[in-house]
Image (tube, rainbow, N blue to C red; front, top):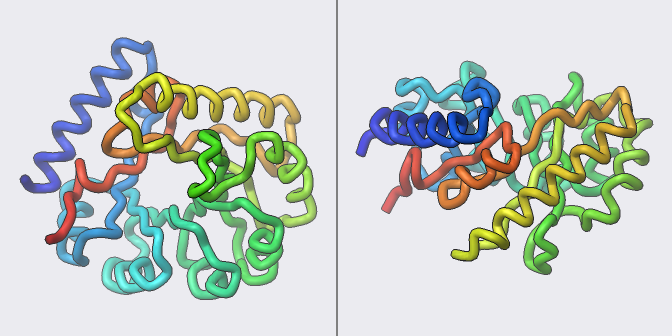
Length: 225
């Protein structure tokens, strides 16, 4: 199917979720995760009306950024190595994987503009996943105050890859509770109004639990063979 056809189906599903949960569809931002598709397929996504693009590898991001320029809103959604910050930080609009102070320090050193960041939280507690332990979040957040180039716009997590919807929902619900805790601190550098959670297999649950950014790859742009 074309990206345009996929997008129409996804928007219908989002509308259905929003209608039954009394949420506003305009509060949900779709990020097309293009790491598994070509530059041409990525261009097709933009032509179909997708505004936000997400990449998780330094090299793939730079290739697509060079090809498409700054028309899309660029999200770096993968773990960013400290030594590669200088290559990408001024070329992205959002970073979804802030999870350690050395990374924050390098961003402060290299960025020439304020960087909108999501703190990545390992809400499921899986050892293979990146992100902060939920209990570390508030301490980490307070440690970010000196880094004036960083604005914490929200939190990000990845749910476990499972068919158990209760487990998936639990991860998303936990992130929502953490967001409330952050907002209660009323930190000027961390408004934390956004939640980046939900992918192709679980975005409807994520929206039900408060997601504002959903990261869609295979369901939207597919996957190159």
